[in-house]
Image 1 (cartoon, rainbow, N blue to C red):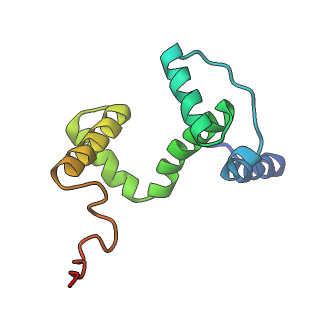
Image 2: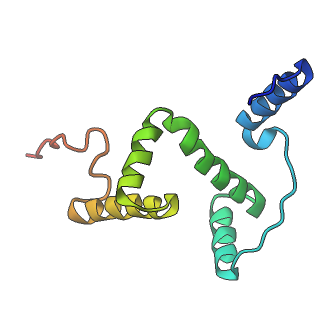
Length: 125
């Protein structure tokens, strides 16, 4: 049975939701977790390439992943049905999607679906 929220709870939840929408600039918390050294080294290397701190890179990675669920909106339902039909976890589904894209790149060429990529270039004379 649902309980009615008080005005304070509703205001607090709205503020929390707004802060979450702002991503890293909103309310933050400290989280400690362990990961394999090779994964941490890879993350540090990626962060360095992008001019970010390790923390900035991890936060951006999590926010991007979270954003996939928000941005997909109604389309997420179709993706969820596809994932269920394949009988895989979300992690396995992402791996499947990326491997499918990789196969397309190998079969065609990098950037094959870039807007304007199908236009023929004028020949030089």
